[in-house]
Amino acid sequence: MDNLMQPFSLRVSEILDHAARYHPWRKIISRNVEGPIVETNWSSVRIKAKKLSKALQKLDIKKSDRIGVMAWNTARHLELWYGIPGSGAINHTLNPRLFSKQLTYIINHAEDKILMVDLDLIKILEEILPTCKTVTHAIILADKANMPRSNLPNLICYEELVANEDSDFEWVTGHETEACGICYTSGTTGNPKGVVYTHRSNVLHALTSASPDMINLSSTDRIMPVVPLFHANGWSIGYTAPLVGASMVMPGKEMTPEALYEMLEKGVTVTAAVPTIWLLLLNYLKEKKLKLSSLKRVIIGGSSCPKAVIESFQKDFGVKVLHAWGMTEMSPLGTICSFKPEVLELSEEEKISVQETTGHPPFTVELKLTDDNGNKLKNDGKTQGKLWARGAAVVQKYLKFDEKVVDNDGWFDTGDVATIDENGYMSITDRSKDIIKSGGEWISSIELENAAVGHPKIVEAAAIGVFHPKWDERPILVVVCEKGTRVKEKEITDFMSDYVAKWQIPDDIIFVEEIPHTATGKISKIGLRKILENQNYQHPDIQQ
Ligand code: ADP
Image 1 (tube, helix red, strand yellow):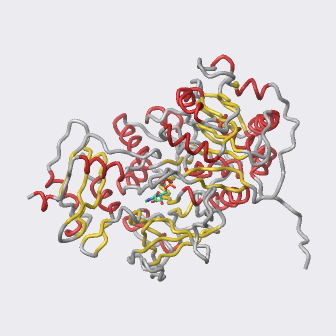
Image 2 (cartoon, protein in one colour):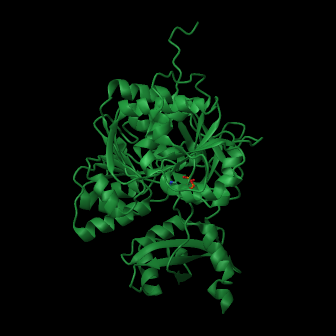
Image 3 (tube, rainbow, N blue to C red):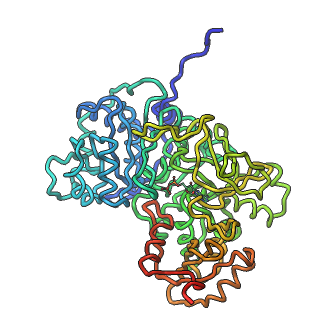
């Protein structure tokens, strides 16, 4: 039978149109990079986005051209998220914490035609622009009064550019599977790889991630993404919030606990970031004896969330934790830990243990575990295996790669090792390259790290496997203690023995001032291995 329903293209412009039509005055409170906190709303964001689309076309932007954006989380950045795809172009998010060489590599690889950059990042722009072969224009996200001094010629002032246009512009239309955005993986192995999101994948992802068992977002919420818009599709919050007509708070570039607290207290009900941000905030709140007056839920992902963080949010501040797992290649949401009826029956202690898992997938995401030979493994909550994913917003091919990165049945190897229980709750054990293989048994570096950071004087811990002549690999732990404190090695191993099996306890503990991090703020195991290699570190059994 013929399709008798209306054609409706799942394009992100539809999201902003909906927000401006039915939630026009919902506030967006934003800390400008220039300094002041300003207010706007979905109606105004749409007007500015339309003006931008029009201006971009005048700068010779055509369908599928790439525009690189290096910017913090501000209301202005949201205008770009819609103005760029609205002009037919592709929004390529750039992480300013990448090394200049990596930035140049991905800008050249994506063939960005225009770069749009926050004013405080002008130094990075000055450094990389001469080597960016395809870039014809650079736009600074500022008004005339705040344009930075620079030796670069012909810089365009964003506010002036859009002020010169009216908003009489029809969004560029086309098939929903056209590209909408690009985000490169952080390149911990080799060069960064470009993940290209389509309009359709972004709309479907936003629809499913807003649903009640996921982040449960509605027009009564005010959401603050602390996770940068340039990290893993900004966890899709820039799409999910307008899709449900939620209000937003955009924290800008200030990431100190003081600055984040100030913004959280502007009526934020939901927020999202990696665990490190929350560890710092919780310490600050306790030290200053502060309360969170409006916050209801906090989404924590990107790396494993320690139990202490879950407990502190819930018990000390009455804020529900939603532990999540995802990756750039999955747009990014893979799972969220909300309670199914089976979990609601459990005791409070048991519920916390469930929250240490990363939860279950939304509609359109499917997960499975296999052994190294591709045989499917049981979902019993104990058996560890390679984690595979497929779904409506999961990568099939990286930008300019000839080969697909999925198998014949469409499964993508996430590179993670995990368990899944009978109720579908998934728990990340490790990245497959970081798991410690000791005498044929697998030790989760994440489990060791989480056990160690539960110690009140340990700020950060990283577990890695080092060569051992008898066991192949044994775990050692690198630890950062709270400033001015010292902890004995035995005190740490005794503490950890309450949480992990005896044979898994690290054989050696190395105290350092700082652990290296990746551009997305995660512990860099590669960096750590390099440091140990440079010091000719060997397992104590070899040293003797
Ligand atoms: P990057 O590679 O730049 O860190 P991603 O955000 O794509 O960017 O990283 C995805 C990886 O982060 C996952 O494959 C997984 O290893 C890790 N990860 C994400 N969320 C969690 C979590 N809740 N617990 C443990 N690991 C996580």
